[in-house]
Image (cartoon, helix red, strand yellow):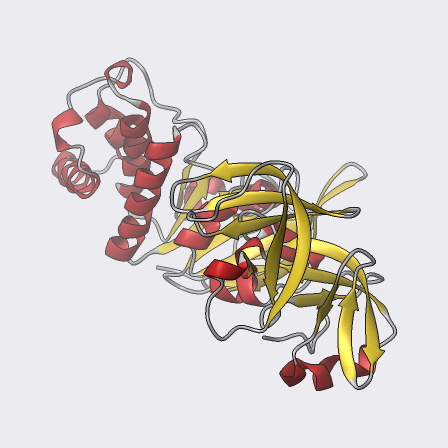
Length: 370
């Protein structure tokens, strides 16, 4: 078992900076997820840890040891790639055992490790099959098993679920979370899917353009995003953003978008009053917008009229794509809601849960803590 540290790590490819002063400390036995859009540097960070890329500057540490100049095979890590990379002519057993045979591990020990890993993953009955006889989900489990038998200090996962269909993704996601719980080993997992990140991680590192945007628990990222990028990336559908003006009127404070105005509840007015008169970005999540008849009791509900542009019935909820003047936004509402495309309808914003961002810096206003 081991911790992992990125200490002021830079990685450049020519003039392009893939990692820009990356600082992350991954605790022993933690499940850290690196998340962000394509090209944000998350896979590069993983490859630098694995030794598949040399860092341009800074230090990569596993435990107390700096591993910048340590060969990949000597770093005591195991990596699961996006592609399964199984040998087609070998059985499942031989695929899982191959790395151990290269290290001249005794045959009895190899058999024990492979059978234990197969039992953990529920693939004991597949050990004599070849990859062509397996489904995508089974192949992925074999690839994970090949990593488990190594008994490494750190497991690295590079978008391992991207080749699976939606149902298998959910199933395998749960299996990997259970695997982490059973093995009690450090996991570092790369994905662009924020749902995977939110459901699996102990902590999430959100990256963009090679820069770490925020590192925290899933719930904290959701409740208190550090900036517009994190707020828009974490959550599905994404947070709604409205250019707005904070306006003071008779001692009350209002968020005025030009097309609709909502009042800031009295309990939050004092915190925001120093910013009255300023241009801001007003943020509210789709699940904090309700139809009046199904709004939760006791919220600070502010009415907004909008026209329905698109509806998506999901069974347990309805996603409404709405237009209010020049502003478009999404609401996640109760499935009992009855509405039609083109219809004007009344909605209510839960003003106990909103965010204010500074448009000049994209940072969340520090006093807009719910």
